[in-house]
Amino acid sequence: MITALALTGLTLVRGERVLFRNLDLTAAAGEAVALTGANGAGKTSLLRAVAGFIRPEAGTVAFLDADGDAIDPPEARAHGLHLLGHLDGLKTARTARDELMFQSQWLGHSHKGIAEAIEGLGLAPLLDLEVRKLSAGQRRRLALARLIGSPRSLWLLDEPLSPLDARWRAVVGEMMARHLHGGGLIMAAVHDPLPIPTRALDLGAGR
Image 1 (tube, rainbow, N blue to C red):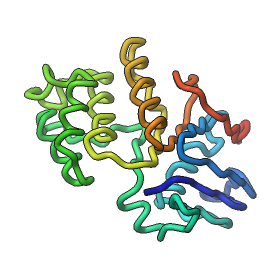
Image 2 (cartoon, rainbow, N blue to C red; image 1 turned 60 degrees about the vertical axis):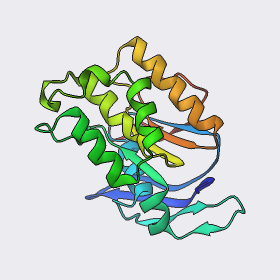
Image 3 (cartoon, helix red, strand yellow; image 1 turned 30 degrees about the vertical axis):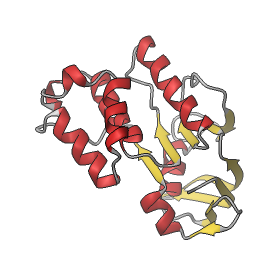
Image 4 (tube, rainbow, N blue to C red; image 1 turned 180 degrees about the vertical axis):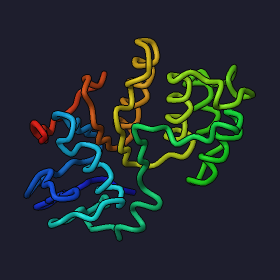
C-alpha cells in the first residue's frame, strides 16, 4: 500500500518547453495536494509523470510503504494508484453497467466497493443506459465510480469536479474525505478549490 509519495528534483519537459525544474514534494497518507497554476503550467503532465506515462527529464518519483521503504514503481503503479484524466476514458457504446464492471474488474474490483459506488454516486438509474446517452456530469460520476469499485491508495485526479453540479461536488467531496480518513492520498489538478482541506502546490503561470 502506498502511504507516501516523494518527488525529488523533478524536471519535466514537453517538446522544446521546460514545464518546471527541480520540483520537490513529499505527501503522506491522509493528505490532499491541489496542483494549481495557469493552463500549460504542467499540472496534467505532473499527474501523468507520477502515473508513469511521462518520463521526467531529471529527478525521481518514489512511492513509499508504511515502513518508509520504497515500493517498486511498476508494482506501485499497477496496483496502488488510480489516474482519472480530464477525459473520462469511457466506451460510449457500452451500457453504464458494463463499463463500470469492466473498469472495476480490470483494475481489481471489490464487490462491496462496486455496490458502494453505485449507491453513493447515484448510478442505479443509469446502469442500463448506453454511455453515449449520459450527460457530462453523469459520465464523470461513472468514471469516478472506479475509485470506489477498485480501491487503491493514491488517487491522481485531473479536474475531477469540472462537469458536476453543486450536489454532486459535495458528494464527491465526502468521498474524498473518507478516502483520506482511511489512509488514502490524493493529488489533483484543479482550477476551482476542492471541497476538502488541501495543500496547494502552485506550478506557476505557464508559458
